[in-house]
Length: 126
Image (cartoon, rainbow, N blue to C red):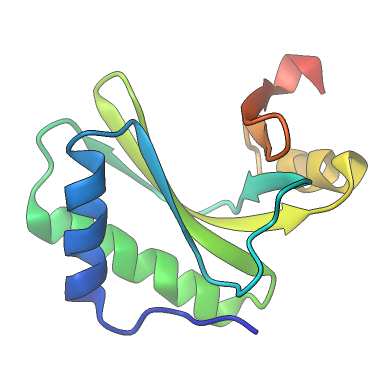
C-alpha cells in the first residue's frame, strides 16, 4: 500500500528541514522500506537552482506527488543536491538491476541507486 502526501505544506517543511543539513532525502510512500534493489527516477522531475524559494520547493514537491498519483509504480519522492542544483524526483523501486537499467534508459537517467550498497551506479557503469 502507498500513502501519497496530501499536505504539501508539511511535506515542504519536512524536506526543507532535512535538506538544510543533508545532501539528500527520500520520503518513502510504501509501508515496507526496501533494503535491497535499485531506485530509478521517473522522467519529469524538477531541478531547482541554489537559493530556491519555499514556494519553488512546494511546487516541485506538489508536482512529484501529482506524478505519484498518476503512476502506480512510484514508491518514493526524493531530493538530492549536486553542486548548485537540487533535484526533486518521483522514484520507482526495482528488485532487478536489469529492469532498473531498462527503466533508467527509457527515462534518460544518468544513474541508478543501489539500495543494498548505498551508492549510485553511473550510466557508464550499467
